[in-house]
Image 1: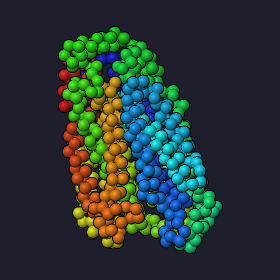
Image 2: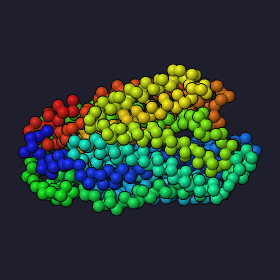
Image 3: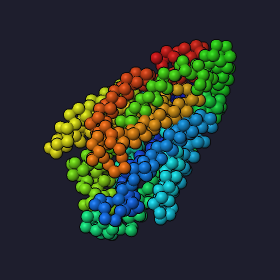
Image 4: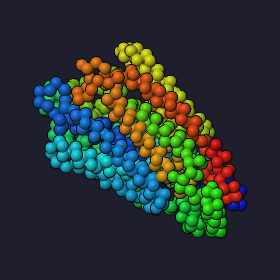
Length: 543
């Protein structure tokens, strides 16, 4: 890092600021996108069961209707595709136009498309599914933009002492989104059950799905718009981050003015330092190509940050393969421990209630605590240690489930399986699920920070698609008679778990490409204030 005399006062003030009220408001404002993201992804798993009963009922069938595999993949997967696209597009746009200008767009897109998801038009199954997929793609597109923008804004607002905890806290809002989705689905389904009593499917296949069921899934999806809408005004009121204004837009006066209001202290503008830094960068780039004006596809970026970008993209990709494959085993686990009885023994609304209750309990004991362990310890243990530890225990528990898999299938051992399964995802959240989000917002230069975070996040979402859908086909039984309707034989659950164990092990190895950023300023990591050495100290800090 450059000596204090050379560093902009506004950036130094942010780095050394004590934890203040504006830090917490920034966490809530930035975190609402993740709250909506988790709410939506959680609720769709409840909704798909109900949609199957409403729109794909087959007269005389022994089981309730369910979505065909291709329709189910489309309804669940189209949001992932939208998210991946949004991460790349808005990540790039956030560096081009500024974080603030783009931030309101993503939230408004989420609000409009959450409402649109519940208004899916028509009576025919194809038209309902087509419009639902359309709105879910654009909902995902908005959610995708929130990943790089929220992480970058929080990292650029935070002080260097507690920056990791603040960024992780934004991401941890996902846990509250999952809980809110589950609790709201329980309330809605309980209210409808009390008002519209329906027999189980095996007693009355048609009567078990009352016409009012069509309101249940629409209400659950549309309410996802509310938390996002409530924070829209506050997003528009947030000033542009000082690091973007000073280091990218080169407007020292505006940066000092904005942060003086936020920090409630006098900050000198220092435009002469901006001019000197800019001139030095241009001279360096013109002279030896080591200046700080290099682009994403330049040899300088490749030399300084190439391995780091490889590290952030691969670890997020591998983590999400394992993380999103959990959906494969939930239905078996819930059924095995008696939380969810056979579908034919319940009415449609009863099934929503039971699944929501089971998933909320899992979130409460496993998912949410893991997020907040990371928030509490990330600035003490460091990002590298937490990620390494998380991948290590995920590997251990995944192999612990896979190798003696036959042992876990016996009824008396099912509780042990649930404990092992829960621990796997506790260490995902108290581990790489949080750190892969935090680190890309800290180690890249300001003018490429949002872009690089978007690339890393999109790589993760690609892993999510592989985990959620690739393994759905891969985990099918090798015995043709036991394969789910519409699927081909796969390698079985045991072999799938072994593959996932090796995926986690690869994640552990690629973690060694990611630098530790604990306690360092963003400029120390990227070298943007390192005038005299042309970036040598930055490379040293990143190694």
